[in-house]
Image (cartoon, rainbow, N blue to C red; front, side, top):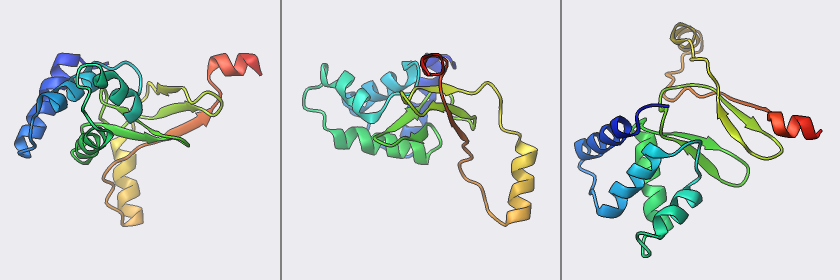
Length: 145
């Protein structure tokens, strides 16, 4: 996991660079993303921030996450019921996702940039957000099976 303070400062600087309004609510949301362990959903982040800012809307959370995603500051991991976000490691890396309990774990391998370049050349695509999701059973669910 990246140092939370470094991630926080990096995301805030990216938002400032785009002239995004930095309200106390949005600053706290960025802090929550930076210190989060795992891959929280927008709903989970909203629930946490609601204690400190009761009037903060879901729309503000989604808008901020969408902007951070567009700026490659968070990775969005789409699941059946809700998207989850990885703000600690915004660089491309694989995610292991349990099909039973929806647990998400980072894969400890990096995506090979040379392979991505070769794929771009052979396909004609410009890859903007490389992401690999691998689905299976987590150790706990595998044991229960």
